[in-house]
Length: 102
Image 1 (cartoon, rainbow, N blue to C red):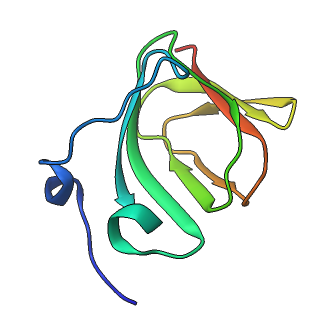
Image 2 (image 1 turned 45 degrees about the vertical axis):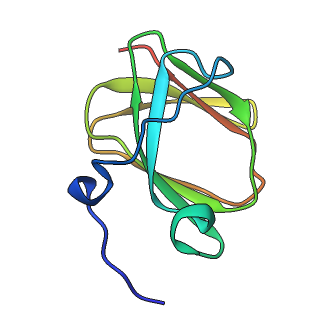
Image 3 (image 1 turned 60 degrees about the vertical axis):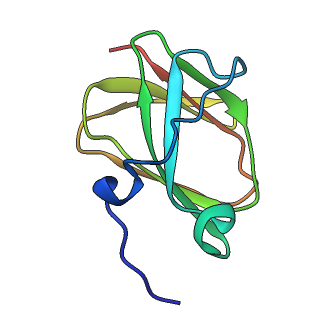
């Protein structure tokens, strides 16, 4: 499978939000439910100042590209400061969280 997606291609997709992740909203660019990818999920997320993507895990691998601001990444209990320009790889079923503290 090979395909190309960009932010404009998901402009009609509704933002997903949940009370579980306050101050966080996202759209999927690559995901099993949207385009049949297997083992990788990639979305475009916005985390408001103070927003918290609380500790969770899921089977697909995931990549975060930090495009603005800074935050605190929780890697299964180990905290690391991340900032604009950082790229984070998260393996499947690894517990992770991200808080916008910038």
